[in-house]
Length: 226
View 1 (spheres, rainbow, N blue to C red):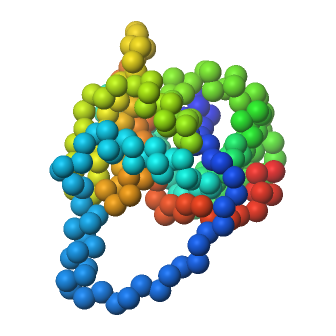
View 2 (cartoon, rainbow, N blue to C red):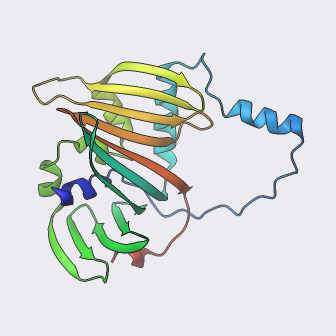
């Protein structure tokens, strides 16, 4: 079960390699400009759920590569089950997940969406299995469709939408509900509709993944996926 919980974070796919733009020198902010920037980052109560979803899909379409730190927490009816943290890297179908324990690399998972390989902190192979076989065994398959959210949105219906501070919050339900139905939730940053948090609730179990220190469309070596 620990393996499945750790691997739940593999929810993204990407397109082609894209170089990061050079950092721009920002002008010194006055109190007025600082307040203006804060205002821009607060969600707009006039924005509709459709507009928020379109903003998410637009970002998803132009995302080439992604690097981000993550914190993942799973609970059952509010009681914590597990927690993990680490860093993810993505380019095309290549995904690497490094999980850390007390600041030390504990495990890596690398996949090309054909085979997924699990390695220990020293790089020794623990196990490998077909990606589809592992994916079909998960209850949260929709979380692995980053890069294909247009399709995800079409396969779900809106349950609720809120403008809350710096975030837009959406809760979706599958169009075809069954005995194992779930709730798929997104927390989007007000400034650009990019994902801050994804969670999936199913039969009392909720897994929440929060992204931090996100770097979009940067360039890194393909060797990290070996």
